[in-house]
Image (cartoon, rainbow, N blue to C red; front, side, top):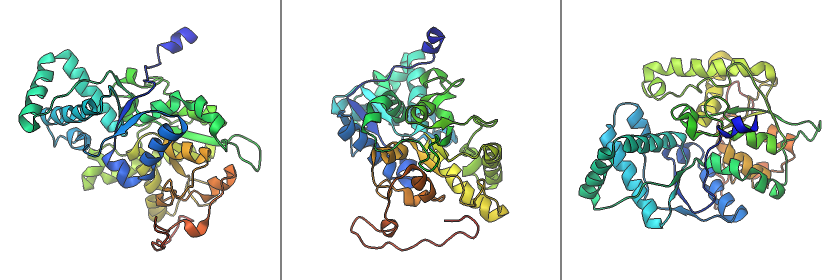
Length: 350
């Protein structure tokens, strides 16, 4: 069996990374990227370049048929030129949509070298820059997965319910663009994606299987970006919640910024529309990014991680794990001043 499982693994570079930030991750859950950089630099002692001159990969526009491929590959080429300036060859895109875009562009360049030369020409004409193709492209969740056992001894907490002594029950959700477009680029491929499940199991939790485990989160770009289609978007998400509800998960773990946002905020929307939550107590099911989860277990402050920005509040989960937090600091800024309390939802308890 181990021989067959080896076919579902991928090469993940050990060090010297170029980090490309996500436009939507910085908007939805801005603490996640800061946590990832801190984990790599301070906990793992890795070299990672965070260049201030980076920009969007065009992924949402490209997959919505707004941005043509020629423009996208030129934008990708400029990002690769920033990596070249840093002297690195291992590319780490924060967003799974970016991960899919870079993988697609590189695959097309390999199939048709003339396209790569065209990108070189476009990039030079646009901004007099040159690029090199990365030797390795890995998603940040790949890297946390790779070093999950290195991080474990540093962790102050485990995924164990301190009141019962039992493993926390966790639903993992893999972003579609991580393993479905190019299955061989994801740990476990599209058949047995293990990148998040491996973290959960290594850190003491129990992975919960359920019928719609691989169903889309509901984002789907065209489903959401066109306002008239948003009923289809929320219906997709509701289908997932209804499927996982009988298994009573303690939280949901994701590796895609769009999935994190929709699985979190659609719970509020459904509660307002239908007076329905998908847990037993009316609080909803907390949704964490893999960076947030790693940071929490390492002992990082929940509010520094940005967990107060979640629609489904996390205090009940923190209590189960035994993580201390100061309620008075939840809505204070970096200067210590109160930012203001948000309005309470009508149905979703906080």
